[in-house]
Length: 416
Image (cartoon, one colour):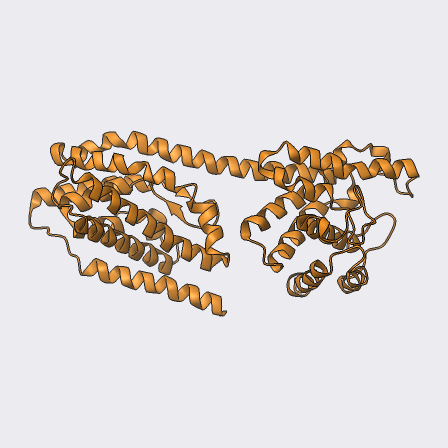
């Protein structure tokens, strides 16, 4: 077991045990049959809301739209009721069938118990009264407490995902949380309204509120679907490009993998690593504008043919330019054939005039070209390619990028 996996397990069990302590030191009052029935109804509504959970963009977490009902339970029936309902009513079928590892199930129970305890503490500290929400003076305590609950949930979950995937907390926050928080904050007024309605008409009437909650689920899912479609389109386009030349099949996917590993080795932010992966996947997209007679030619190019072939970098950059999400990477494609010594194309940039993303893609691209069979040469071994990279360090490639690429080859590629 690695040090990081031990740290992950320690964190998961710490949250789980702390939450269980909160759970069993807050036992609801079940002596009043009417109150008990109302809590059962609220628990049912929370369980129903769990069917509308939305998965994270990255990682294995999900977010539920049933939290307004949990807030209602806590405000109307006290902190203990809110803690138990948030912890137990959120159990899902896959949890009970043990399709989710037990430590994760317990972590989720503990996290929700902790978040509800923080909600109750904040609500009480702000002057809120349990048993009913007074209007308008009780609204501010409710909104502040709901904000604390949401942020605590986001932080505890993000730390777990960060440890599990071994990526930075900032990356998890940007990928899974920032875009989601406005949607969750928008539910707070709805939650306050649900409390006011439930205290007048009973919890069963809250079924009427599930339509906007389901609309919220739908909008969140569509956002994630659009990201998935975007990723699939980029992969399909790169595959189509490689398919034009049987000798480069899989080239774009490999270059994207190498470039991402190289960017990580250079300690670039996770969001930039992801961008480099996408741009590297499409680094040869400009070849769609090159004639097959040139692209598939097995012999040497004439001067004019080589000049036309070089245009693929500019064409590819122009394609990325109109893709809003990848436009910032257009110069990485435009200049991925520039050389550190200034003898490349199209602008004969030298040294750090060449964007770092382009230097990374250039190294990854050349490494894959060296280690795969081409019609004009046999592939090198990985060790031979390492020696070639070192030989060209300072002339064709950025020396620091080469140093990092050697480490990538040793740590990730030779060990496969």
